[in-house]
Amino acid sequence: MLPFKVQFTQGRPVYEQVLFAAKKAIVRGQLKPGDAFPSVRMLSQELRINPNTAQKVSARLREEGLIEVKPGRGSVVTENARALKSRKNELLEQELERLVVEAKQLKLSEQELHDAIRCHWENLS
Amino acid sequence: MLPFKVQFTQGRPVYEQVLFAAKKAIVRGQLKPGDAFPSVRMLSQELRINPNTAQKVSARLREEGLIEVKPGRGSVVTENARALKSRKNELLEQELERLVVEAKQLKLSEQELHDAIRCHWENLS
DNA sequence: ATGGTGTACTATGTATGATAGTACACCATT
DNA sequence: AATGGTGTACTATCATACATAGTACACCAT
Image 1 (cartoon, rainbow over the protein chains, first blue to last red):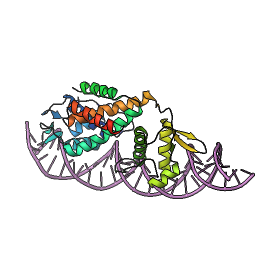
Image 2 (image 1 turned 180 degrees about the vertical axis):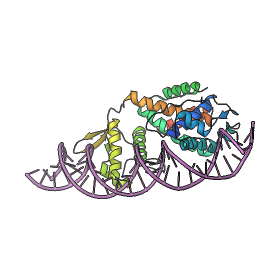
Image 3 (image 1 turned 135 degrees about the vertical axis):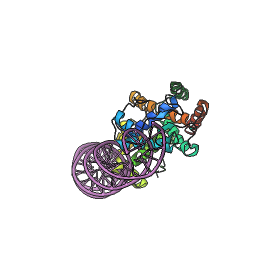
Image 4 (image 1 turned 90 degrees about the vertical axis):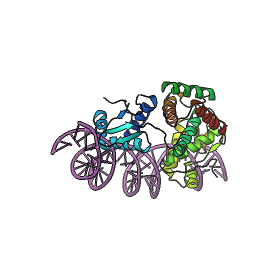
């Protein structure tokens, strides 16, 4: 069994969905620092996705510093899970602006948006 | 001149960037209800994009109820800019969760996230 | 030596985005 | 009635990204 689940939907790349599911599991604490991360072949088999797609997920996680490779033994969740703040922050800023625009378009109040975020924040604790 | 500007970047579809820029202009009030919205050909010329790409933008805005067609005269920003809350809210929820996960990954505190949102909120007033 | 691991590479098929070009219905304007 | 601008619709082509298939190799625990 995998330490996380993926609810596949259409319209988004498979590797992106798996990547996000893995990140979520780490953030949630379902995958703690030091825990073993599923191998490429394991991901491929369990999720019934192509080995290369699984490899892409693994590579991205490694690039972002979320997992570390223990040669011969597999991968584990990084102890110091500090990503590159600068570049990542730019992306986050774009998503933030996008989110606020859509929220305003939906006539949400700033308070309602904050409440919604608080809700998600607590769900991931 | 167009009533809004687009800062094109790579990696994202052109129609999506133009679409977002238009939404932002409406939310900001740079484009007020009743104002004329640029024609497909105008968008195509000014932004140097394909007519079909411009048409795609126009169609999406119409689908979301942000602009209305005045046959023979062009399009105008809708008076009642109330989108379909149900379906839109689902998409917003997905973006919200995504955002919170990334914020946590960046070790942001909940307070910092709220502050960032407040900042963007005020920028769009 | 064996087997599992990550990594790398080529190749193919599919889906999406972007472009080019054309055509038509609609209506304000003249 | 004629003109011109508007939105809309359609086919076709090209480029790119995504997904898949298959193979190969270096690494290391066992």
